[in-house]
Length: 305
Image (cartoon, rainbow, N blue to C red; front, side, top):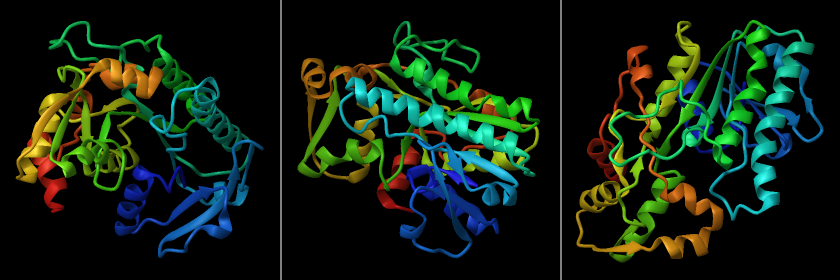
C-alpha cells in the first residue's frame, strides 16, 4: 500500500514493485479518476477527513508513505507552509491510527523524509558530513521534517518495522530538481545559483527506488537512513556536468543571491544552502549504488540508458 503513489517517487517505485511481482494498492482521493494498470489497484483515503479504506488496510503486507505537498511548488506563504507541514503530519497521524484501529497484517512501514532535516554546513567544504544522529535544524524545513517523522513514529509502538529515508535532491528526467537544472541549458545557458559553491547531496531516482526496495525486503533495516549518493557535489559542478554531458556549448552565468531571494522568498534559503550529507549508513547496511558519482548519474539521465 502506497501513499503519494502518483508522485515522482511513487510512480517509479510502483513500476519497480509491479515488475517484481508485487501487487500495489495506491491510496488516492479520487478513486474513479485513476487509470487502471496491471498489478495496480486504488483505494480511497481522505487526509482532511481522516478517513481511509479499512479493507485496503486489511489487504496490505507493507506500507510505503510518500504523501506530502511539494515543497518546491510556490512561494512559502504562511498558508503554503502550513499546507506543507499538515499534509505530512495529518497523513502520518491517520496511518498510525488506522493501523491501530483496523485489523491488519502490515509488517513493514517505509516513510519518506528529507535531508531538509539538516542545517547548513558549518564550513565549505565540510569534512564532517551530516549523519542520521544529527539533531533537526531549527529552520522551517528542519522543523517540518521533525514533525513529519514524529507523526509516523507511532508505528514502532504498534510492532511495525519502521524505516525512514531522508531523501536528498532526486535526479530524474520525469520531474523534480533535475528538470529545473536542465531548463536553462536548452537555451545555451548554464545557470549557477549564487556563488555555486553550495554542496548538493543528491541521489539518482533508480538508487532511491533501490533503497526503498531494500528497506521493504531486508528485515535488518530499521530506523533512519540518509538516501543520498556517496559523492555530493557543488551546485557549480552539478550544472557543469549536465552541460558537458549534453555535449553543446554553453555560456555560464550566475543567478545572484539577491535575485533568488526576490523570486523565491524564504525558499531561497534552501536553494542556496550547502548541506553535505553522508550516505555511509545505507552502504554499511548493504546497499550498493548503481550511480555513486555525478558523472555516471547524469550520463544515464542525458542518454536515458
